[in-house]
Length: 172
Ligand SMILES: *[C@@H]1O[C@H](CO)[C@@H](O)[C@H](O)[C@H]1NC(C)=O
Ligand SMILES: *[C@@H]1O[C@H](CO)[C@@H](O)[C@H](O)[C@H]1NC(C)=O
Ligand SMILES: *[C@@H]1O[C@H](CO)[C@@H](O)[C@H](O)[C@H]1NC(C)=O
Ligand SMILES: *[C@@H]1O[C@H](CO)[C@@H](O)[C@H](O)[C@H]1NC(C)=O
Ligand SMILES: *[C@@H]1O[C@H](CO)[C@@H](O)[C@H](O)[C@H]1NC(C)=O
Image 1 (spheres, rainbow, N blue to C red):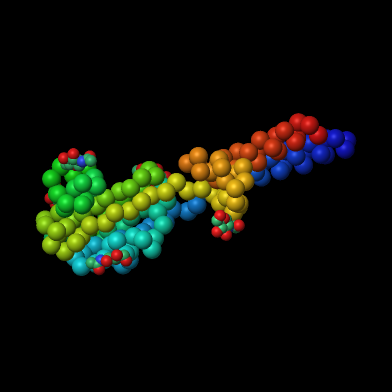
Image 2 (cartoon, rainbow, N blue to C red):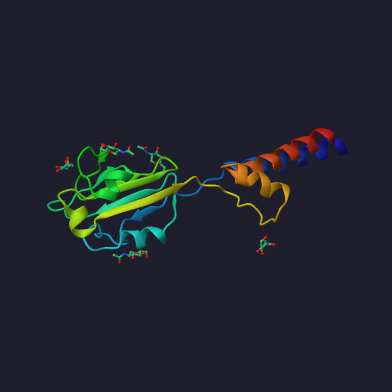
């Protein structure tokens, strides 16, 4: 009976750990430029972007006058040089347009009709993978060594924890 209870507790703890591992975050809608209608010239979008954190699953919102401006997803070269031709994606619809950030990578957007070079209407953002449990701050420990070698240190950490639980459960 006692052994059964220990095993049950173990299983419950294991469930908690795995639940934590898959815990996710509510998607955030980022209003580009900071306002409802701020995809327009002479806004410092670089300054806006460095104060935001973008994670996979989040959304961008572009609010703008579609008679004048547009939103084109481009690559880095076209972003740097304000090249409108051969864009990746035309996001422009009604002027209240959203874009799904589906992958952990940099995204680049410019406005068409010359407003990238004229009014600096361009924005670059870097999307990160969401990691639920941050690594504890350690110096020179085992975890620190693996984390520098791994792209997903948080996940690895949880994996190690889960593995430890499974082993403990089997042994008890
Ligand atoms: C925009 O903001 C960035 C970061 O704050 C700054 O480095 C840059 O000089 C600003 N650009 C302009 C044109 O003000
Ligand atoms: C957009 O992102 C959400 C998460 O915020 C995701 O569940 C959904 O599948 C994505 N939609 C498209 C069309 O990619
Ligand atoms: C970026 O896109 C332009 C236009 O399609 C293309 O000429 C260029 O080779 C691309 N650059 C990179 C680094 O992919
Ligand atoms: C992008 O789409 C909008 C809306 O359909 C259209 O008005 C605009 O001309 C397109 N821009 C380019 C560069 O194709
Ligand atoms: C970690 O190490 C760095 C330099 O080796 C030191 O500046 C920092 O204070 C240390 N952090 C902790 C939490 O010990």
